[in-house]
Amino acid sequence: MPAKKTKADIIEALYEKTTVSKKEIHSIIDGLFEEIKQAILSGSVVELRGFGTFEVKTRKGKKHARNPKTGDLVSVPDHGVANFRPGRELKQEAWKRLAVPNNTEHD
Image 1: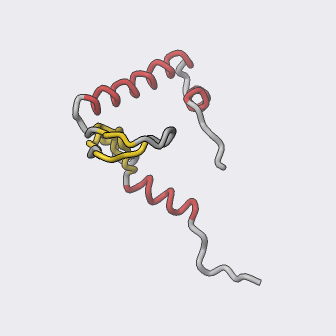
Image 2: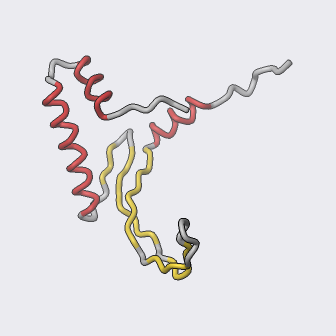
């Protein structure tokens, strides 16, 4: 399993690359996340070119769903779900990262 990278790890990495204080970086990152959250919750689509798109999509409800804990039948109404679609560049880089070369020989 890949290593997990936390917000604190990202703040530390940015701190090492800039002359900005950790407190300021933390504030900027929190502000960025809050702006994205408020935008998508108000119905906007947030597109960060080269990275991806954030939005809230409507998931259709189900009249006959099952509660996984109890097994009881329940009705689930239509509801919103946060969605992220990676951008083309991110998709391409992710594809390359795990791609296995086709010309390898096996013994």
